[in-house]
Image 1: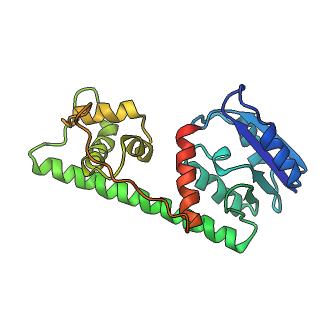
Image 2: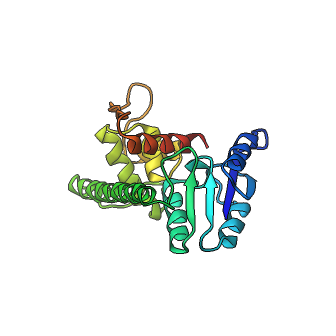
Image 3: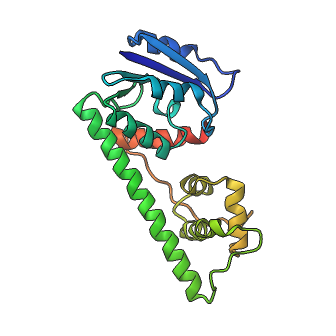
Length: 223
């Protein structure tokens, strides 16, 4: 059975567009939910995931309607696949009921894992660099011990100048204000006139997977 799931971030937003599209796609049921993109409280989605059975297919308007983050999205889809439940997005090249759709998802998951490994490596590089400069690894005042690796990673990524502040915050799963607090504690000058150059990452229109991945990341910032 095809089951639709529609989500909007606030009650002021209209869910009708998603619902109409899901019904037109042949969904026997359509569940709706009001929850922000970053919210961990999604009782309707939780109920849906508990209720589906092997052979069912969850249909969504776009991928950002399902996962609150890239990591969360991958985890949800992985669980669905383990229970032989499909996922189809009406506006993304993902349909795990087909071989091509599963391939796209696997590429997506592999890229996300690669990014996590890069962050881990840069975090370790930041620790080594700090020790080489004579720092003993003690945490700055006001930064909890568990945040030390994130603070080092924030400094490393910021100094490299490859990502914007928004992108770094997104990669490290922290707010932009927290990022700047970590940078100040690390002795990194931030503010007007102190931004490191960032390189624009071009989106290739000839590569639908990269274009889709970029769109998902941008939508996470807005959800």
